[in-house]
Amino acid sequence: MIVTEIEPYTKTKFKVYLDGRFAFVLYKGELSRYGIRKEEEISDGTVEKIETEVILKRVKLRAMHLLEDMDRTEAALREKLRQGCYTQEMIDKAVDYVKSFGYLDDARYAENFVRSRQGSKSRKEIRAALMQKGVAAELIEQAFENCYADGGEEEAVRSILRKKRFDPMTAEETEKQRIYGYLARKGFKYETVRQVIQNYEDNA
Image 1: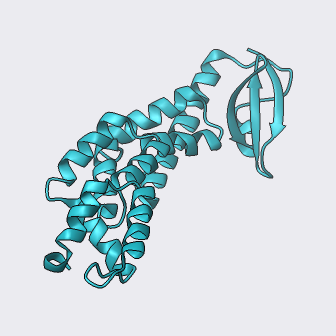
Image 2 (image 1 turned 135 degrees about the horizontal axis):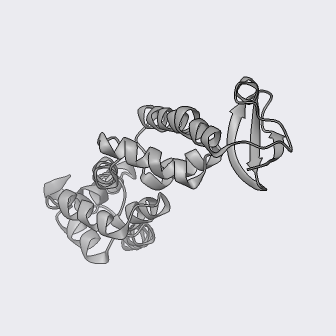
Image 3 (image 1 turned 180 degrees about the vertical axis):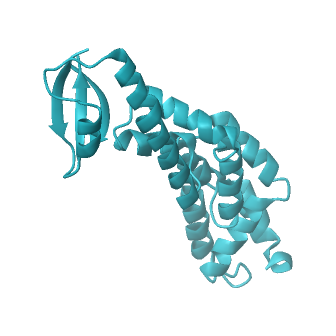
């Protein structure tokens, strides 16, 4: 293989291209250590050594650090690693690594996400947020099934009514229509809202 380009990435890091294709990012000292110079040949053995001893170790540590910082979906973790200029192959290996320890679990993430928001958001809002984070539709539905057995969406409606200081017992018809419209736009079903308002006095 030929080192076709060594491109500055940051003040201390450089992108290395082999045979015209991006290969990895190395620090200046690592370029010297492995004898990497533009337009010179590099052996397959050296490339493999760099990938296993430097890049793979680095991407695994980066993945662990990102998950220690905050819980993430697999899609979000992959995107963060892509931003760090790791190749798809290295990202796949890092994802498999953190999964093997149970640090990355979209099903768990979805359930925790739903539980933390079911008291204030509609299913529609929660579903949209999880889809945007790259969680598979079947995992979202499973999370809903696990979390809404106790009528969580009704509690979300009650919470919003309390925050808006809405009292069905004294509200005029136009005010009721406005609150129905507001909750409908947030994704709550009409029947859910109607039942909560009808039984509000018992549940407030």
